[in-house]
Image (cartoon, rainbow, N blue to C red; front, side, top):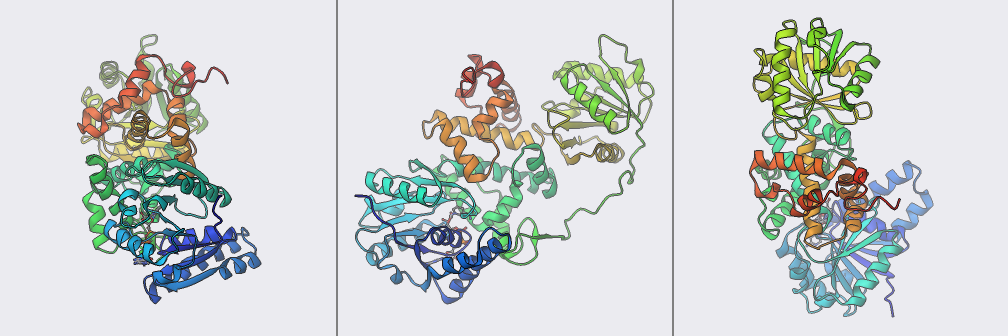
Length: 557
Ligand SMILES: NC(=O)c1ccc[n+]([C@@H]2O[C@H](COP(=O)([O-])OP(=O)(O)OC[C@H]3O[C@@H](n4cnc5c(N)ncnc54)[C@H](O)[C@@H]3O)[C@@H](O)[C@H]2O)c1
């Protein structure tokens, strides 16, 4: 017979634990909420009341319901208070020795029938379970941050977990209004295994000053369509927790260097820059625990729209005859620029003699682009900014085909051009300040958000997005989870608008493969090697939605 869960315990009331208490109490379940000391208990209580008060202020929770919710929670110091609960969810810091110690103690304190669950993100549930005398009653119940909001719960079953325990926990998740995905015990489970390589890579970009924190985050929100930028997300997760997760994933997940925590993460933890919880991480917050970002010494100054050395641009030449070129003409003309369009090969380039800016959108082929830029050099006035919309070629190679590399920039519009608000301005090691300033001013006139980055494969968005998609393919290939479960996990656990396989089918598997290959060629890190399954699908002509079949069959719909 299925177990009744009338009373549960939650151990650790930090970022996750307080939210987990709220989830249970909101659903009519009594909670014994446990911390390590009175001071920590006060902080945990404040985490919970802060969250429920915000829900009341936003009209999402009635005052009476908040009071009833809080009345269901019994705050206690020490694990002894958990002697009569039906289930315990542990949410203490991500350290194996600590969790094992707590589970051994829970085993001693709790009723023999009680289920013991860990909210670990990356540690082995199996290793935690064998610290008890009841490993068959130990599972992972991995909630997502913020627990009251995110719909996904990963239910982690070890080789020892009893089937009825898994079934009862799945039923409990449904009662909590969550979508449970049941999976085996592997580092990072589904969502974090796909998320943390990406987050760490974003930190590496920031650490190497490849782009600013604001630009990295804006790029992924506007160009990648994600609900938060990676650095803001790390501040929400907590840098200390993120460090432990990365470190564990590196050691357990096959020593993939992409999970080796970027040194900056460790430095920030040591310096107490833990993110929102300490009031400062990549960004500065109004106070500890606040989500409100306040300006600090790194906040960019407001720029005058066309000031700081930008050259005047009134007339724009668009080179190319495809969809990108058509989109560029629409966007530039719509913003009031005089636009001249030239289809190279079919028309002479002389029409570009009077323009102030050239934006090229011809075939994505280095030879073709270099030849075009050499010709532009002969036609255009001095001081004209020459821009390429390449998404994968090195801009410096194109710039060096001209005698004026200081005037050459990349202007990578996230496609489709009229729809997406982001432009990546790519600055090579030869690009001059004036050309960059001009590109910024033009983007401002277009009403686009511009981010400035260096000249590396994938710029910001593709360099962060495609390896994540490639990792999803590797996870599928390893048989760990299904296409649907992986898509679900990223949508419901991380709030992504589309799952990785939906995105791959939409973008085109051939496009994803080409981008991944370019990244791998540049970075030479085995972790970036294209997934063999991706290569096979492309070879077989299963290129995605347009081809009728990719990871899913689109012909039936
Ligand atoms: N932060 C996230 O986004 C996130 C998301 C999902 C899962 N997790 C996982 O949840 C767990 C907790 O992470 P967090 O980010 O909430 O950490 P946190 O540091 O915010 O909170 C941990 C809490 O545990 C308490 N604690 C420490 N030792 C204790 C003990 N012996 N007894 C009782 N309480 C004790 C601390 O006082 C603190 O309040 C970790 O396993 C983490 O991997 C975190």
